[in-house]
Amino acid sequence: MRIPKVTIRALFAPRSARFAPRSSILSNRPIRLGVREAWLAHERYAGRRITTTGTIGVFEAGMPGEYFVLDDGPHRIGLRGEPALIPIFRAHLGRRVRATGTLTFRPGVGIFLDAEGVERGA
Image (cartoon, rainbow, N blue to C red; front, side):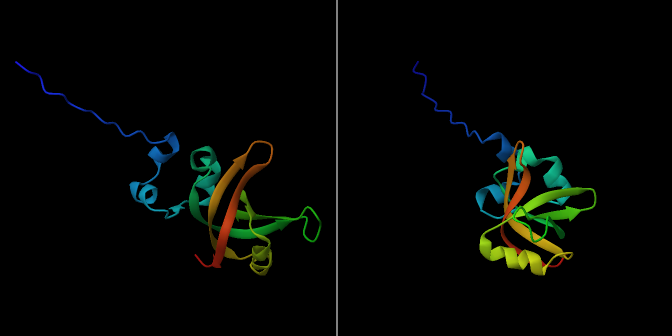
C-alpha cells in the first residue's frame, strides 16, 4: 500500500503581530489605542502604526530641547514629527487631538509617537 505525501505548511507571525487585530495586520490601518494602553504595552506595539487620543503638552517651550507630549491623565507619551508638524503641534497646545503614527520605544529615551499627523477632536 502506498502512503500519499502530505505537505504541512505553518504560518508563523511575529510575536507582536499575534496581539493585533487581524484586520490591522492585513491592511496598514493603524491600531486604535488609548495613551494609557500605548504606555503600558509599549513593547508590544513598538514599531506599529497606532492612532491615539490625548492632550498636546510641551516641555522646555521655546528652548533648543523643546519636546511635545500626548497626555492623558497620569500617562503620557512623547510626540515627534517632521519639522512641518511642529507648528501644528504648537497650534493645538492644550487641546485634545487624535494622532496617528508609529509607536517607538528606546530604552533611556522613552516612548514616542512618530506622528504622521494630528487632528483636533475626540
